[in-house]
Image (cartoon, rainbow, N blue to C red):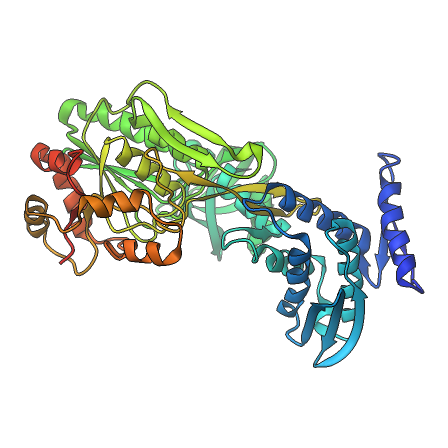
Length: 524
């Protein structure tokens, strides 16, 4: 049971007593939670969310944050809701202005999350009395403005996700209970646009373009898509569907079993004896998808598979453990990655287990300027262990790892708490990965690329050494990245053709993998 009290306060001291006091009351019994409403806002919940979010950030952030700076930036970002609001800190005071008119002052605390949280509530209440936009804003808009402002002082990858955003993110990472279909409205009901491979819908015999007219006897026509999705993706168990198949006039009755569905991120095909595996992002099914693709290709094509191309172009990354598992599939022994950070839990070391699922079949990895995060971890592990030749352009350069902090409102903070080092000790963050064969610049023919691989390369061993142990400053990073500029090559055919050629040509591959050779530059 939740009990809510709405009270008007005569002083800021009474707000402090109410918020802190009611938070304590909530701990006295599991069955009664009392929330205090202050000027239309759930002050108790806001206080709880801010203390949890800023407390975890202080404890786990990659670099030690200054709490005063975090909250000052958080309040300053109220302008994201109403640009007329201005807050500033000077001489121990937080000043609040609206349209250049002064509307309030508050004494700033020092390095106390609890005191700053209370001050933030006070500042919001003051501003709401003058700002119509802020008065219309619900708690979620306030959380977003506050956390975005604070996290923006740390790095470019820490971020806040609302309850709705966090739910969508969890779907992409972990899956959701449902049928595994995407539907659009249709005059007769809803029509299936796509089906998750091996998902419940495919297993039940549903097909793309099928029209679902009823679900458990309930008519779906004219219902909003949000309502249809709620019906189709309910709790685990059977659902009976009435289906109209376009090529027939017959109505089918199909029973499907709703189960955990995770979006597919892996595609594969075999062309000319080369297995080509594309990875769009990394979720809970990605490593299993790559393993399945390799096993199926080796089973169906026997000894005809002469090479494997792993295409990571445009892949923004995702779950680190999936990147580790994919690299581990192909590396027989050695380091995959090392993590380091301020929090004790951020220090992690990943080593490959014995065994190579591809039994040494030659490999190439394609990356581009949009390959980031987990994609860079996989490419670096295969490159440093000399398991694959990496071709393409310099990668994005996101070598930071985020931990997910769940908040009491159902939202979450993705907080940077560690940086990744490659097996040879190079830092990916801000620098990215240098390919063995650089394909930046104007597209060239495969013959031109191969000719330049055999020719004297322009990237020296010293440049490659600098890439592995660069000075930690943006100017050095920029100069090194200019050796093979990061570019988006999502569908450029020559990149794929070069990768195919390398895995098919033992001599070419040997040159690219030779330990004492510089990395190869084919930039025109």
